[in-house]
Image (cartoon, rainbow, N blue to C red; front, side, top):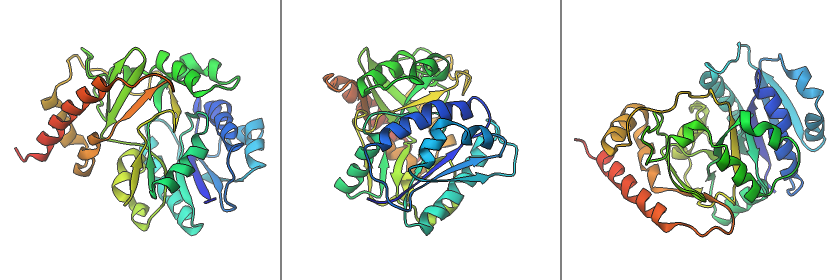
Length: 319
């Protein structure tokens, strides 16, 4: 089994509590199913103010009993507004450690909750597809309405889907292509029915990847910077295989909506202003988010394909 470096930026509240009560809870449930390489390590980047709270917690003690954990102090005042700068420091430092240890890397988030078999499936997919970069999506859901539910008990992936979809974060609810108030942040956009979501995105989050020297200078926004630097990628189309929730604060990116409907032309103009050109073609990929036995609605995939083809064609045109 390959070793993996898990890197996480954990600062302030509610992130420290969510990290301990939700993130590590789901991580430990998953780690019962996998054997990690001896060079595996969990890196926690922090300003130092929360180290005592973390080390006193039962989840930290369980984690440190199965793998090496190291705190890396960032000598800066960490806050939500400066997160991208801190993430870049974190990412580049973690890449260096992963290269030194000949390990895979997973850039985690304090508010990610893993579903059943996430880790075992991740390693299997890398091997099966001979990939050096594995990518997938988390359902973006809302912390305020899910925290008390998620912190107690175990959830199978169908239950996790229900929790995520019934508490979907505003940044995703307004990312639906049919919304009359389409998102101001169309890094990701959706087509949905009452029982499933088809997700396409310019920025696709990395799950596990092999670090390279080129990544030493990459941005900490891994969903934008990692994929173009991987030679052999695999993007999982079935959320059930790599199930995750992102349990985000309601105020994150709020208000995420515009006062207009979606438009191919407006989205193309936005993408040219905000995204590197190598990310434009990512719209060819998609993921279906649903319960295990729900029949895939092919019409959603087809509708999304038609729209995204138009977007990519216009982006490829110089005019």
